[in-house]
Length: 350
Picture (cartoon, rainbow, N blue to C red):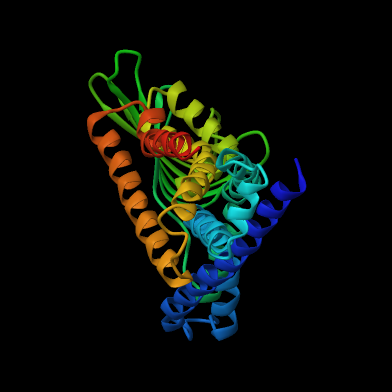
C-alpha cells in the first residue's frame, strides 16, 4: 500500500466519521423525542429517556451503516475530485481501480465494525436499555412463547426471564399423536439441571375416564433450557450469529419452521459485504458525473441511492419469504446485483 492509497483511505474515513456523527445524532434525537412522552410513567424520568437514547446509539449506527458508508465515500472521493487531487493522483499513475482497492480496504474495516455492532454490541446495549426502561416504567417484559420438546408442546404465556416462567401449559402426546395429558403450571424456575414447577394441575385422559391431579411442587425434565429461552427473550433481529445458529438447530431438531431465523442469519452475514459494495459503488459515481457537484448535491444523491437500495432490499426479503426462496438468495440478491453493477462500472471507468 503506497502513500496515496493511505491518503485516500484516511480521507474517506474522515468524511465517513463526520457523516456518521450527523446521521446518528439525528437518529438519536428522533428516539429521544419519540420516547420523551413516556417520561413520568413510574420512575421513568428525563434522565432515563436520555440514557435509553444513548444506549440505542450502537443499534442506530448498525442500521445506518450502509448509508453512512455510501455517503462518506461519495463525500470523500467527491471532494478529492472537486479539488483536482484525484486528477493529480491519476496523473501520477494511480488508476481508478487502485482507488477502488483503497476504498475496498476501508470498506472491509467498516464491514468488520458493522458485524461487531450487529452481533455483540448493539444486541447487548438494546437489551440492557429496554430492561432498564421497562423496570423504570414498572411494566413487565414477559412475553408468550410456544415450544416443542419431544412429545411435549409447551405454551409459556409469561416468559419473564430465561430462568423464570409463569402461566405455563404443557400438552403431552401419546406415541400415536393423541392427547394424553395437559398440565397447567403457575410458575417455574430453573435450578441448574431441571425446572422446578409450582402450582401444578394435571389432567390425564384415559380410554374411558378423565383424571385430575393437583401438586404443589413438581419437576419438568427435557430439552427446554435457559439457553434456549434466552433466544426468545431477545428479538430475532437482535440475536447474535451464534444465538441464531443455536435457535435454528433447536427448531430443526423439533421439526419447527426456522425460515424466519435463517433469513435473519443470512442478512447479518451479508451486511458487511453490503457496506463494502456500497462504498465501491460510490467510487466511479463520485469521480465521474458527480465530480463537480457540491456537498449538498452529493448528499442528496447518496440519500436517494441509499433509500432505493433499502427499499429493494426489504422487497427482496419479503418476496423471498412469500415465495419460499432460499435464505441466501433472498438476503443477498440486491447486494450481489449492486456488486455486479459496481464491478462493470469500475471496469468501464478503468
